Amino acid sequence: MTKPRHSPPRIEDKELLELLRKARDGVIKFSGMHGPRSGYRAMAGAVVKNIDELAQILTGDPAYFHLKGHSAPPPLHSRPKE
Image 1 (cartoon, rainbow, N blue to C red):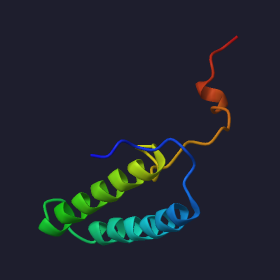
Image 2 (image 1 turned 135 degrees about the horizontal axis):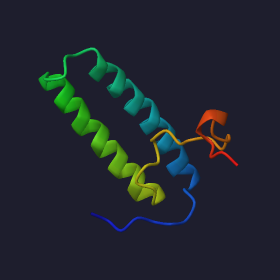
Image 3 (image 1 turned 180 degrees about the horizontal axis):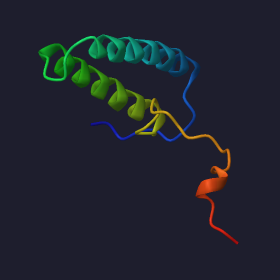
């Protein structure tokens, strides 16, 4: 595997990453239409894994397409009592 770059993606990379995001979302949607032991779901998982690996090569971030948490504070009930 190629060593990931740690510089910001080039314009062409950004366009490719957007296309990969759309493809990844479509494959995940397709995967959800099939049972957990389906061969289709297994193949879709492999495609998603390959898309994630390509995104890592382009961005240096192994979780580039994964949902990121937001910076909102935790709910009051989960905060430590003072």
